[in-house]
Image (tube, rainbow, N blue to C red; front, side, top):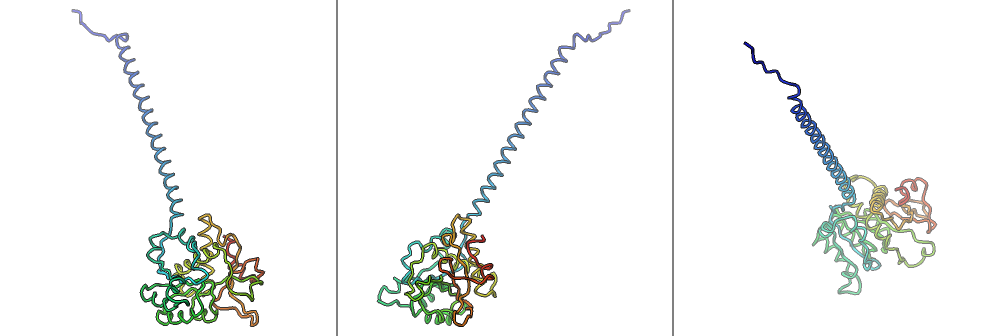
Length: 294
């Protein structure tokens, strides 16, 4: 009896084999395309995140600081009408912290009811609004007496006397530091009132505020290196904002030297520009040439 044995014909299975092979190829091709697409999307996301981080770090580098110390500015007759006095300050510190911590007593306030400035308003304001530092700009004559009273009543108060019209020695006695620009020779024997460029006053104001903000970093540091450090910090901060400190003038900060006794002051500092003809010692030039080495 003949056995009925089925033998699979290669011709019969060939079309099915081809179909399965084609499906496999299509599957592999689609898988490769999907994988490539996923890799492309991941690369785009990574690039976007990287750019966002760089953009964020750039924004943070220009983010405004918060003013952390309470300040009272006392503005004398020659400076209270500087409408742009705090321009640089507002570029560096955020408006909310300035609103909370920055207080102003101007010459117009002190002369609102009297012809002569009522300097007792300084101590009255200190009592009403306690602050950590008093920064005067052109404090009127008689101001040193009020500073003495303020210092005796508030021994921890830091006092910065800028561009004084008062006698220097009394101011030195009650101030952390007294800072002025060296006058040109033509003004040496003239009235103190000199037209100081706005950018110089704006930079000096920011230097004083920077010195206050750094006051706790090196509490035992002497006045000259302390203020020189504040000036260097200010120049660097303004440079990052695209602003040339002092209008680009290469001022040199140095202690005042008595021309007769040849003795340097402890806390009376002078900003000297090349146009005044003043010269600083080589050591001081290396330490405090402000605006050149930043």
